[in-house]
Image (tube, rainbow, N blue to C red; front, top):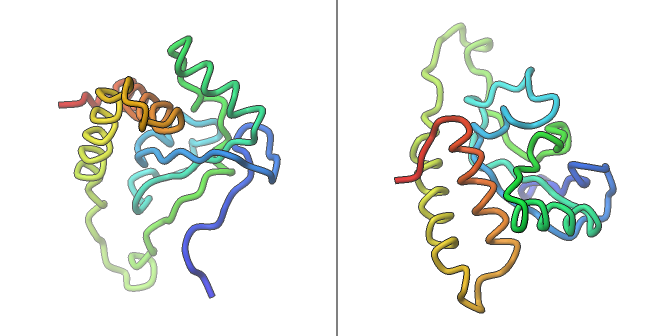
Length: 146
């Protein structure tokens, strides 16, 4: 029985042992390696990417200290996401593409809140890395936080 998303291997090295996960909006899949065949508008909900311990240390350093975005090195085949069902082929009916703006708006608001609380000792490094990746990735794709 399926009880939710499965844990994927490290999106950088394919190691099955992962220590960190970040969630990103579907639109940001376009920035990932091998993402061309993925119809990001058909992704339902957030996309999760996982990192092994050594890669997580590198990613955290790149994001927090150098301001770099790791998504271009992450293999989309190792990401965890759900695709909407293809009723169009089954029913010969055309449906509207899902609107991702509400999800993006919520994720940006959460990211902005996290980044404004960076000095709070309760804010975890993982949360800051995730927030930075969300904000930077959406900005690179022309979506700005409000």
